[in-house]
Image 1: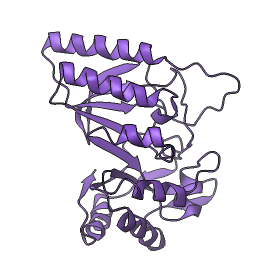
Image 2: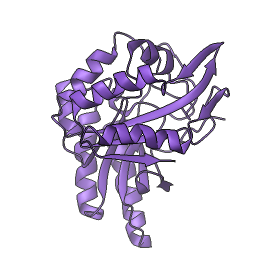
Image 3: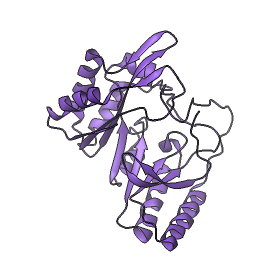
Length: 257
């Protein structure tokens, strides 16, 4: 069963990676809106819709976030993170850079000790305004699940002309000011094996991680039921073995079970 959010601002929720997190959803309610269609996505399959898409305005988002933060402050609740997540890829919103500025200003007014986190698939970082917005937040968390183009296209299923090499070049351009999130999974889809933990994949993925030199690598596996029910969790000891290879590169890494 897919998990879709029904509000612009949701939570706070307990995140295994970011503690008590107040979520910000820039995308429509009721369906996933993303330029990836990952086999493991807890939001389900990307819903391809034709015609003009209604997105919440920058004003709508700013008002919803300000009202929710004011409410939490009155209740004496303190989120640790304000996190861009929700029903798909947040950076596809045309006002994303301005929304980030609004979020930082609201954070500073209500919860200055909280961090702002962006969870993104890295598909839009070739755009200067998107990259600049990401560099403003404390946790710029970008996806890199695969080492080879073949596995990337099969597992992440990107739309358009997005390639793994293009994403890697974009990640490298952050000069270390980036956190890489990598999800590992096993199973099969339509009779084809899905496994980004095989030696060939890990070697290629490690090469990309070494080129990017991120501030941190977050390694994890599926936590909720994905749309493909033939996918399974990768055992903790396998995740820890992958993490040890990252550590050998001199790059900080955390494993989340």
